[in-house]
Length: 113
Length: 115
Image 1 (tube, each protein chain N blue to C red):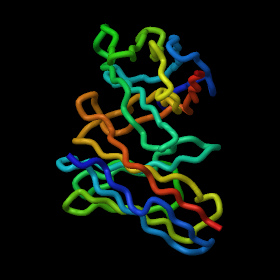
Image 2: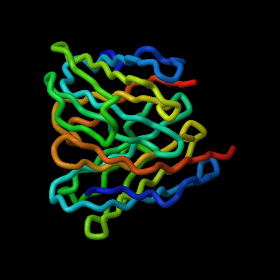
Image 3: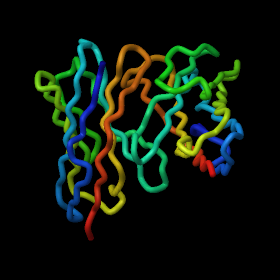
């Protein structure tokens, strides 16, 4: 069964600094997709970034980028120039088969002014 | 385009009662998934519907059920409520199959409190 592990329950970063959130996953599938979602206190889950496992190039979305290491099954999220609005719970997600999404336990990110 | 709409936002029920939650997906999205989120268990998958058919089901007792209508709107029902059912229930929609072209889009959730 697919699993997603986020080993950092909580992280803090100073405003304008860079932070990296870790994620490892376990899958036996050859074709899958990876996502990072954030859930601010407003509680709506928002898509941050997405990555196809068959693409070696790391995805980037403005200040957000990933370090995808397929062999190591690692999918970390880097947030550059952190802003107060980045404070949220971040979830690493992988797909399982055609229809299922597997969520990690989340990392709470605090941004310090 | 309107996002995923969940109603109601808050619900307070007593043990033994039943509850129905509603979810309207983004227009054109045919897949609707439900998740239960609690501080202790995190996000747990309940079930997923596509074209009125349940394609996937998580590990929840039969008290949890759902359905999808021909317009893709979905409802989730929990019967004989227990205190442990208190949670944030999230609905998500997507086009069809899981992919980066069809990521999950979430609603604001329904906060259910069972007393």
